[in-house]
Length: 343
Image 1 (cartoon, rainbow, N blue to C red):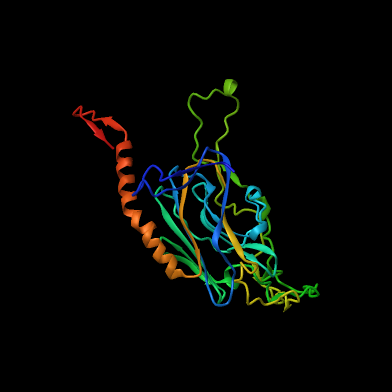
Image 2: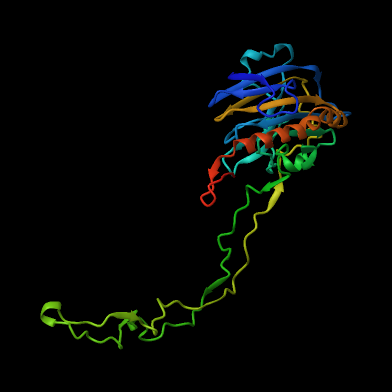
C-alpha cells in the first residue's frame, strides 16, 4: 500500500546507505518481507526486534511501528493490512503535541488477543534517525531501548493484561441497607436564630448623598445605591458534628476470581512461529524512513548490528542535518545597520 521510496533521505552519512521512506501525504502504507530464518519462541532464547526510524517531515500525525508476523508459506503479502494477525507491534506513534509514544503490543496466546502495554513509553519526535529495540525474555520480562538506552522494563504480568485479576469483588455481597457512611451530620441541637431570615443581603449606602443636579421631576425619586450588608451571613445552615453512627466507607469484600489462570508462557508471542516483518501505517504527512531492521534472539548481536549501522552513520547524518537547517534559515535585514543577518 502507498508509494515507498528507496533512498537515504535528505540528510545522511552515506548516500549509498538507503532505507525505505513513505511518500505521498494522507495515505495508508503497507509493505512486508520474509525473515531470513523463522523465529519460534522458546524457553531458552530471547526475542529481540530492532530497527531505525527517521522523520524527515516533522511528523504531525502518523505511525512508524513495525510488526512481527506469523503465517509461514500461507502468508499473503498482497493482502497484508490492518486486519492481518501479528505477534508484536512495536515502535513510535505520534499524533499531535501531546500524543507521542512508543507502542508495545504483544499477542497473548491464552486470551488470543493483542495486548497494549499499560504504561506509556516515550519516543523521539525530532527529524534525525533514532534506534528502537524491544526485548522479550523467557522469564516473562521485557525491555525497551531507544538509541541503546533503556526507557522501560518490567514484568509482562505487571505491565500488560495477560492475566485476569486474582481477586474480584464478591458478586453476592451488597452494602447493608443500614450501613451509615456519612461522617458528619447536622447538629440537631443547633437552631436558626430568631429573625435570621429578616436580615437583608443589601442595604442603602448610608454615606451616599443625593447629587446637587438631581431633578426629582425629570430623574424620578432619588434612591441611595445598595451596598453589601455586613450583617448578612448567607442562608442559614446548621453546624455539622461527628456522626455517632458512622461506620466508615463500606469496602466490597473480595473473592478468588474463578476466571484467573496463571500463564508462564506470556513471552511466547511467536509460539506458532513468526516468519515475516512488515510496516502497516497511516500517515498524514509523509517522509518517515526505516532502515537497519534485525530480528534475533541475541541482544548482544542487536547491539553489535547497531554499532555497524545506526551508530556508524549517526554523527555524520546529524552534521549534514544541522548544515541544511542553517542554510534554510530565513535572511532578515538588520534595520539598524542595513546588513543582512541570518536567524
